[in-house]
Figure (cartoon, rainbow, N blue to C red):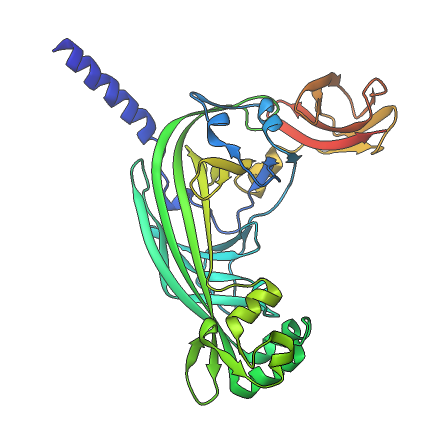
Length: 407
């Protein structure tokens, strides 16, 4: 009985601890928020880094993580746009772009967050301009409050219609394309991009996350993990003059002139696009991201972009700062020069008492540490080997980072 009671108490403690991390409307991306990426480690190789080599128990991210990746960058980027005041998506709370430049337009209420539609470049599909694809019905993204084991599955559909002339430059760029375009416009007058998006989100894990090394958000955090996946299926349709829309793979053209170029008087437009431009419809893609939400923050402090089945990590970002006010409170005003340098780094900074300068190699090893005082400091880096280095300057709860080259 005592063992049973102890087990019950242990379970209750764990549930209570992790239940404190929930996602609500008030901490789900406020209007106009700026979220900064402190460190981004990106794998530029075909194969992603195995998840098991990054995620351990307890979950610890430190400088040694960088050695697993091909590239390491530091960026300072605003992710979330102010809502629109005209055109499509005026009901949005914010919009956010992914790495491919596709932007999702999100509306947040006290009850849930929904995606109103997608906008982005259509050059990869052979069209000249950007699209604004509004869903027939908003796609549910998350219901509040989100806690461990909560999930959301939804599907949305939208179409984007343009005149066939939007494809003229694409046809002109390929051999025989101008001729084909002339025959296409004789039979078809419009092109439609049709997209179906399936969304799956599960808050599937809770635990403790430790950020160490030279991460700006050093410390231990309770986290709630969201396993988020988008699947896009995109089709192209052409509208036959005086007729109906046909899937691009059902559209054919017949002319004797094609025989000398394609070996047949009849060509299939879908096959022609695939052969000449490398565009094959339907286009299908899946994006999976693991978001590690922490208590009292309105963004995931850590994001992992994985391969399709989440077995490997392609990109990882550690974030800080929920808005401009929060970010400014962490920034030290400093001017570091010259860059590149051969012997000394000059550091001009505001008067703030003693600060600590740490210099790291590209693989994350601490190679030099100095105490800074006053408004001007000159640091001798002559002993460092030639190459690129990263630095942090910290003073109390304030910290900045950057990079320089030694030659």
